[in-house]
Image (tube, rainbow over all chains, first blue to last red; front, side, top):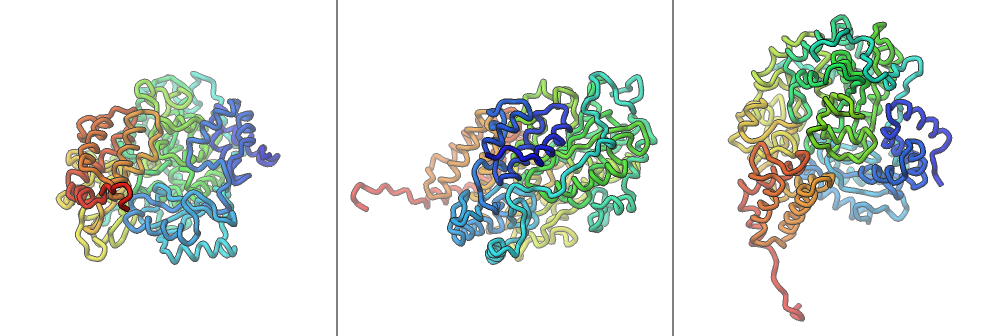
Length: 202
Length: 437
């Protein structure tokens, strides 16, 4: 199961149209598949291979390189606790230990109810707010052990609302057809319209 | 020491990410001015400004733009927003708080260099930044600032938002291009793959950092001379530094480039406000995880490229991480090395195997299983990744990731060798005879 749905296929064609070469859409389409299913399924990868016109193995090759793509379910909420240097100095190891103890899971595994998984991750660029974490890539800054417990309780009882794993930006870029420059298909050796002829000292 | 802010000038304005507010505060004036000039005149302004790239390597942007071979089309702009260097926290702020400024910078760059399409590569983990950029682009397209016949001129360019998916190495420019082509993000060998000559899809490609782009509108609006009037001889304008770790006010500060010192930014009340809990300074990382460490005696160095290079480190990506007297330097060193081991792409053997072994050796030292020979072994492995362990580093690898892992080891071992030795002498490596337990 889980090729891209009709609606997502339309988005996929939209994305494909923006790149001079189809394979460039591989990562955006993998994100789309992960948004649809919460992780990247084999069927989705095959579908993407058809769309970008490469072999499924090539899509898997790209997919497996990148940390964000999960090829098995990781629960509704993925909590990534930063253990980069700034967070390390301000207690990230203790926070990860606390998270493992309270949730009863090791890093990389999912709680029994299938809701939450945790992982120690490399620097997430919130160093001045250390220690910090992300829930499905939404930031929480200056996290104490108590703050973590409140977060987990909130995720469980629904008072903290976070889009499910796989959903990144809620707004997508739209390029209206009549506004697009469409330079992706510029003729080779053809200088762009605004470029003075003959070319200067480039 | 109040200096005019350039890239963070709208950070106090919480609505600056909306098009109306951006335009009301002088936004897209730089683009209008650029379109009234010829592309080469715009390029000259940036050359005059001597704007150094803000990604880490610090190469002058105006010079880089001149490397495109003439009359080869199409040419591309790839903007590097894959900010992942530990300690670095500036590009995300620029993308989230003032996205139109970055977009305007991209447009001006495309105009000046004749680039026919722009890809804005934003790190995958930054959902909020992606959202802000997507909204900003949608607004800008609707208002005619991006796309076909921009502001009624014959200048047309698409700006495409592209998300990464979690790989530090993709911050390296050739790996970024590989990733944008849909491949595993592994660096390419230079030569022949200098992006300006052979970049995206084999075409001339300019790769610039987000902060570099954010400086362009101001430069075109106010002139390269005005920019060059700020800062020091070899470091013009302003720079954004993120100060984190054991300080009172960790934060992101835009300061005049080259005149402010490390002491000012770490200890100064208007910046990081000194050491937390009155502790003493033990050391600090001056420019991201890849940079060799600095200590007390380096505090009076200016935040200036040449001075810091000569002192044996780099300003890199503008990440200052401060460590106080209670810091376990062996663990800090291990933390940084583990980062490089995890993020090594695996293409070059010295880095793939070397960083992994460095991490394992440090792990066992911390776990109380260290051997007396481990300290020389650490140096030996480091030597294989970066012969001579000098600064700037020599490398046996395609990109500088491997040699970067050597920096924290060389720094920590030279200065805090006793801490490593303590771990080893106090370690519990008793051989327990069979049956005795």
